[in-house]
Image 1 (cartoon, rainbow, N blue to C red):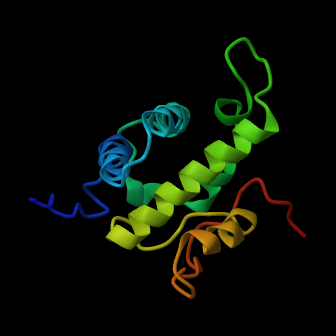
Image 2: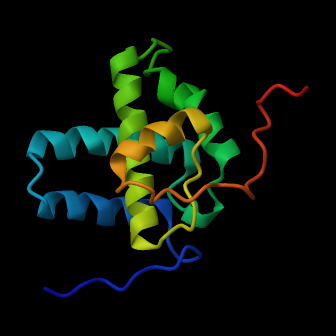
Length: 143
């Protein structure tokens, strides 16, 4: 089987990499229902970040903003999404970012600390590089 060339973090857009991730999940034998629901999660993620967003330009403040956004928390018509649905979308996004890190598409996980700690279950032990040079979260309280 021919492997696609690895995208650099400069080249890889959110949309093209999500498509590749979905193909990866298909190759793993994920069910049609799982692929469908993950696709819906990725629609929300793309709606927030934009399909042409470069992976390498997604930083902790951007992910923090998504976690607080109506794109994640609200359905059409301003109705709240259930907590279970929101947690699943965050988990799918986290697993996608971990996969991107493992493929070399990003150098570091752009996850806030409370989400990063959950990413440990998605990766082999000790493989999560610390994000030490990302921009601070503008929504975080200052002392």
